[in-house]
Length: 395
Figure 1 (cartoon, rainbow, N blue to C red):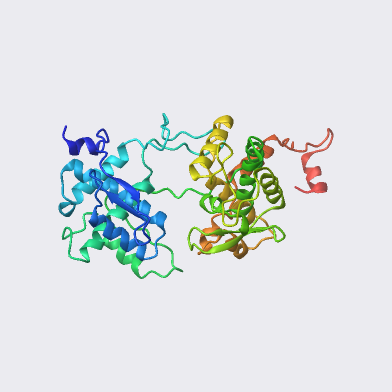
Figure 2: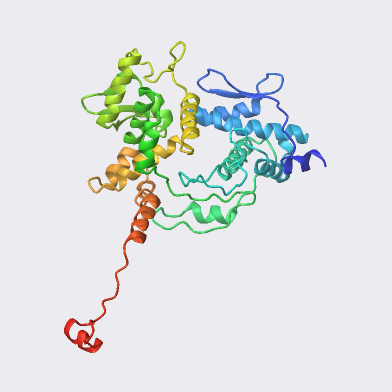
């Protein structure tokens, strides 16, 4: 079996050549370097164009990581980037579909479901959205260089010309037409948002080990803020009297206010009483052990992983945003545009996804229905015929 066949089957590892490094430069926050530590200029030119087009540094890093994988595949296949074809792209897709994802814990059954939460367990490999994102990044990379007369004549990533033609001038008021996906594109299931039921939320909250974690969770579920937004909270952006705080929004990168419940602010005050008030401009959330430093996303994620292991659940921080959004959207005291403002959705259709019948609440009502005693049909007493009863009582 050759290198190409091994990568297609996912049984061949990629050469660990090069890495993505932070540069500290405003025009190029992240760069791809090769095995010798030299910057790969063709990738840097594309990433610099993304940064100058006002993409966030995290977006630049995400694109750089996808291009690092693509670069390693080309090195393994001994193909120059300007000679790449759809065959090399197919090898990348085959490897992503078959190779294990080191960030995930493998499960015996891809269709397994957590019995406590009802959420499907993560597959051992890469998600369809990850594969489609990698295809989009590689396609954009070659489109950029084609504009400057570099690279192959034809973009190696296949496209669906019919899909592009139908969607290019479509009115947003019209339904999205159903068109076949482009070759190598993966089917992405449109899973409905999953909110944490109230009993399981109480159980999760009670399992938290300290007041810092309780304050974090309470702010998550009352504000619908994202993890990156809440971790960036500083002490000078809390309005205690107005019961709100300001975060740097992930999409617009504007400083926007979000609400907070009285319980969340009380827990936040207790945490700051223990940890001390942060200096102006310094992060609110800090580590508990050793020298205090800013709480990272990975430390926050590890905290939730420990709680999930103890409870036998598989909740994520985005489930907390879904929980807050579902509670608000189904509250008759709040209108949908108000919820859209709190969630900071550009399109109200994104907010409409939360106006639905919760599956856990539906199952709870069905259990009540099953336990309800069945009404027996009334039978006439002895001496009365059914016709006489029907004349008097109807039927």
